[in-house]
Image (tube, rainbow, N blue to C red; front, top):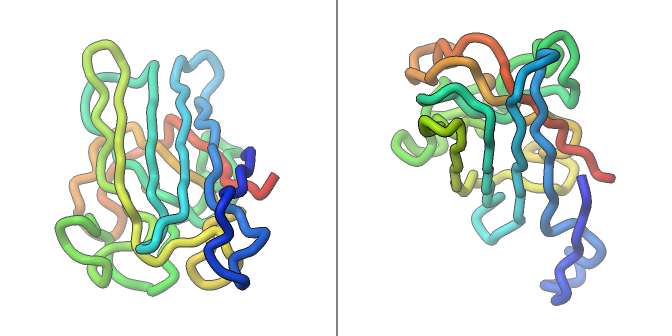
Length: 167
Ligand SMILES: [Cu+2]
């Protein structure tokens, strides 16, 4: 991830911290055309996520931040959803943050051309270390739609993955 520091220092405690970064989303399987970029930007409420993908089968695909910063084993090494508050799975925009995992981003929909985009702001999340820190975790694009059922939305395998790293 490339880190760009904001030109304006917001406050002393934020000085030197990352305000934005880009995660490269890669296919988890050899020969798969899935790829994309996920931009993360620190905003007042949390992290604004802007994702763009291509080479994705048309339709809706679950999209989440998972616990571990590894894409090995077809993305399985990323572990479960990032869920620091140990709450049920959901869609934060609709269900509220106390009824969704901190890393739940709903679905990313790809068109017939295999391209898709998503913009969402996830409350609480931060580049800073700590409970809601996302550095060292992974962004996962799933094979199937997140139907918001428990425990993880039944979205199947992992077709795209990118590690959120500090450098
Ligand atoms: Cu997931």
